[in-house]
Length: 380
Image (cartoon, rainbow, N blue to C red; front, side, top):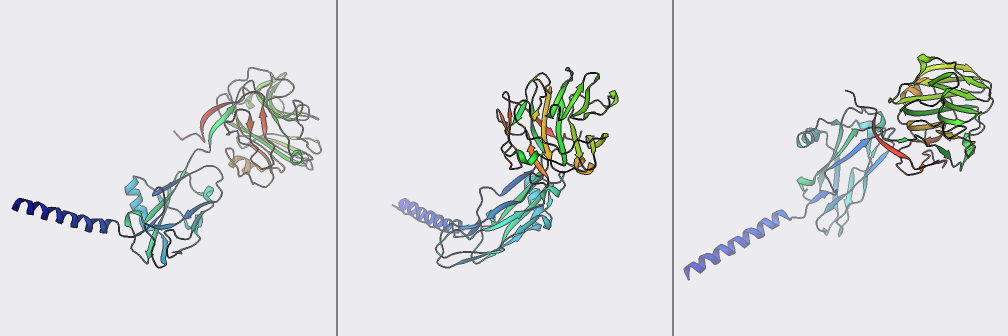
């Protein structure tokens, strides 16, 4: 019998201890609502504004309003670095805005009103640096659950281009829903990022309209790997074997034309390769069909570009040498004067989206092949 009393006493003690422990563990505390403590953003290209919703939560409703105050925890950067074996630095104050520092959880509710973190001008950040912004509950009118008291917003530079289109023995026409944006242009800039596998044909086409305004490589009696601009008023530049493009390397090509100045300039990798005086009048590119504006084709199907293409753009302005040199891999789709922008990162079978919002999508003749890349290429 005595043995039974001892066992009963132990059982009661265990139950009481468990209840007390449970009370301590499950006390109603406030915490930051999130699926993960770390929210990571890979910065690619011209990053616009990013908004992150902030909310606090309770396990159970309270009979009175709960007041909550947030803070940016610069003192938590070292905590993050130690916990996640990183070497991040605090995100500069000009790159974020906390819309509400003080919020409430209404009586009878478990969720606070929303606040927001607005991240901005991220494209200006050093892509080689990892940035972190710790957000914490600074104070509340109820106990805070310390293990869920801080969120870390992490920003890392990533490849600007992850995939390109192989248009070997292929080409694209444009479904001109809004051709007016590329017609009657007194100024124009055309750009493309290409990687040629070979120049085994007399002419390899980049883009444009045959006999009117065309960027291609090669011609009869002309180096097959040199860029030539073919216009209704003659071609330029003169043949020069020293100006040939390499194979198996990404090269950025740009052409500018100003009808008032009668000036045409050809750029390779952001540097002037050739200049000419041309009196072409206004440029009209919004013509459809195989005799219109093509990417990777001119006159006949065998004038294709054997290789990869990306970042094909048309502007209604003359871009400066500096602007061209600084943006080979990406631009803001809302940039002033950008009228078509085919990034060639869709990985769709036939359609390449126009990212300007003008809805002039490019349509491939045959299913596109997509090549994985990392651009700019990592420094060795």
